[in-house]
Length: 386
Image (cartoon, rainbow, N blue to C red):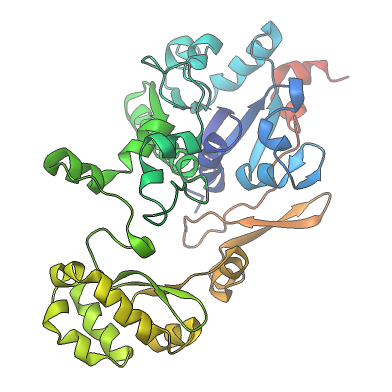
């Protein structure tokens, strides 16, 4: 058997985080992703994102987003660069870009501009605000989307300042959504023989993620806000609790878990207390319940409570980054992958979360700038001595 996307060729005019994150999923699953980089200024800006580097033009950031890809350097505004680009497109399945919304048309990366070369081509565009509308030419980044879409009003403690996610969650989710958009359009193109444009934007994804909170507001006028202890807006116990040495997050998001939690805590009386009989009752008395559960949890350590729950109560320790990555379970299930690297011997990054039973996903380091020029660009092959 082959990998799911074996034989798919994607020409990616991409940079920084969201776009490369999306195409890395596709490369992990077997697609040939050819990363087009401007030869001026050192290529993809992600190569120069520090503060940690493996060498010139090879940052830890770059390696995190560009595994299993190839790199060519092209000036798309020059006749020679355009000719090389169109040669790549002629036998590609898709063109991908994550540029400012007004640039794909200017650079000739749309289906309209390329369909004469390849009628079945899919052109996937990831931008900040889309390719149409008054913000098409606006630059935009993850944290801005979190701010405008209301995330900062939902994150952190009620009496604290607005707070963003600790990671670039909108970049990651938009990149993943772009991979879905591209593969969906590719299926359609293979069925019909006709390609198309598909669009994904950071802003659209940020707003779409509001999901049930948006439905509450749009239909009932409910404005959700921050709750103490990172609590769920309507279910409890589903929040942080203090232990003897730290914190634990417990999520009794089904009624059956409430009784089990009380038994494991040595407080079966709480399960029989009329004030805590249902989700609605517990929500009405959440502050009181938080104090009672803090008291119970504070009698032992987080690790011991995790052992006591043994998978019967949904719970997790509150780790820092090192504790999360050093959890034995993470390596046991293969979430960290190792790649050969010319400067370091081997390097490690997070593995693709998609499993393909019976197949080992590729594990090639991110490419050097222009590493595949000679192999892939017609102008370079013609220039080779005979």
